[in-house]
Structure formats: structure tokens, C-alpha cells
Image (spheres, rainbow over the protein chains, first blue to last red):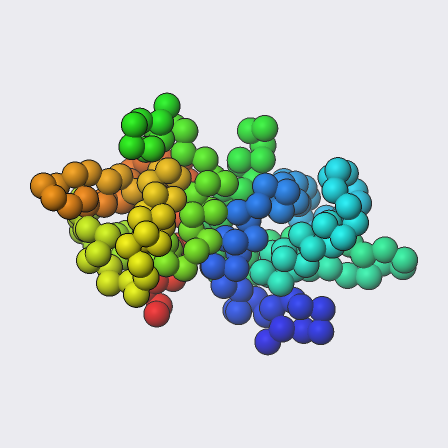
Length: 106
Length: 106
């Protein structure tokens, strides 16, 4: 089931959607940074400092959210994203390590 | 280095290219079938029986080849593809298992 914000349940996370989400370098960087941060880290979209428009950023975060890679929650007047590390690890073991390792090499 | 046929060296296989290649369901199915076959299995593009044009098939196999997922070799009057399982496993450990497991659930 997908909730009203477009978050799929953990057991409905699909490899195809996750790979498509991670095929984009900006989205992969978001996941890599969250994967290397302490567990439960929440960050706003703007905190990543990407040189793209707000609409573009919103699009990329929606793709990540709908693939099940991140969860977005309202925090006062902004939205924060956190990695669904346990859900992804359960469905696709090892994938986050690969993404985090790549980001670390940059 | 990339050879004249577009095969990257094993150590130049990039996560982004591999994920983009695997984001497509047809290409993922090719990799899943090869990953589940005995090691060293060679198959022609046509043997997969996809209901797409020859040009489309050629495109998909080129993407797989340029990402480093498969190696294509001439065999008489046809071309055969085999999975670069060792190269992929060395660069991106566990990824082929994820793809093969998904294909097996269909």
C-alpha cells in the first residue's frame, strides 16, 4: 500500500523503481549522503545544496520517496527526509552499501 | 579503457551506468536470465524472445555492453552475449544476486 504522501510499504519496494531512482547522480548523492550519516539523520532538501531549481529538487525527492528510498516528514514549516535504511536493506541487501561506497570515493 | 566494441575495463565499470542499464525491465531480465544460467553461458540477443524490433534489441544490448554488464562476441554469423559476472561482482558485490533474485520471483 502507498500512503497519501506516496510512501510505499516496505514490502512493496520494487527493485526496478529503486534502480531507476538511483540511476540519477543527484538522487544517488542524496542517498549516499544519508547512508553515510548516523542512522535516523533527517535533512531538508535544501540542505544538500544542489544548484537546481526548487521544482527540480521537489521532483527528485518525490522519485526517491515513491521508490521507497526516503521518508519525508513535515517539521514545522519545512520537510525533512530520512533514509529508509532498514526497509531497503531488508528488500535489497547490500545496495545501500554500494551507493554509500561510491559517494565516498568522490 | 573502452575497447572498439564499447566494453569498458572491469575497473572502469561505473555504478551509475550499471544502475541506469538495470533500471529498464527488459535489460534487467537479460541480466537476470544470464545470472541464473550456468557460468559462462552465451546467448544470442534473439534467444531471449523479446517482442521488440531488432533496432530496439540492439540498443538495449549496447547499453548493457557499454555499462560493462555483458560482453558480446562474434560467433560465426551471429553475436552472443555473456554476463561479466566476475567483473560486476568485483566492482559491485551482491548486485547480480539482487537482480537474479527478482527475476526468479516472476
